[in-house]
Length: 174
Image 1 (cartoon, rainbow, N blue to C red):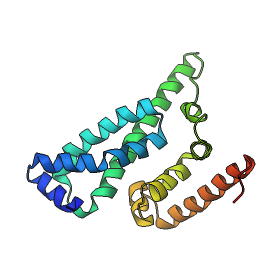
Image 2 (cartoon, helix red, strand yellow; image 1 turned 180 degrees about the vertical axis):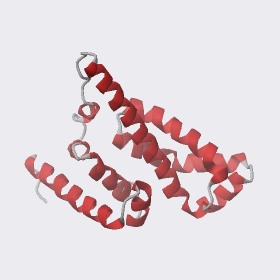
Image 3 (cartoon, rainbow, N blue to C red; image 1 turned 60 degrees about the vertical axis):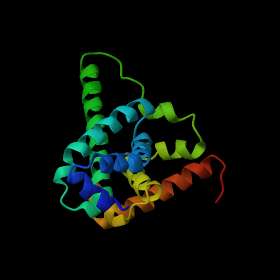
Image 4 (cartoon, rainbow, N blue to C red; image 1 turned 90 degrees about the vertical axis):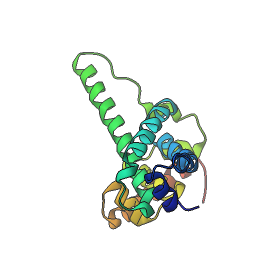
């Protein structure tokens, strides 16, 4: 059964269709969020995403575009979490407290590729994750990130170059 059909059935009130959509997309969404945040925050943000999906599903006008819509919600949720944490850290610094450790540093001791990926700037990492790891098209990435397709392509190119340079520094050769 296609996502489009499941969305239509869910919009008609069929709970089994909602459960099937969640079961089908739970791991890809969590994986995307996990690559953008640490594990603890990923669990919380993923729950927020599914709550937003269930609430917003009746208003989805193009059921065939479920995946880009879903990842747009995921991206917005990750961005909101990062933005709120950044504001909180700035308030702490203004109050004279020391800054918390960078959450990206918690993932450094993972596999070398994951380390390299987490070291990329957020815009490039996001495009790499969406394009290669979530198998979304350049057009879908552009829609999710609200940027032109040319920008997606240039970020992909830059991300590949940065990833290659990082791995070569660590002794890996193409």
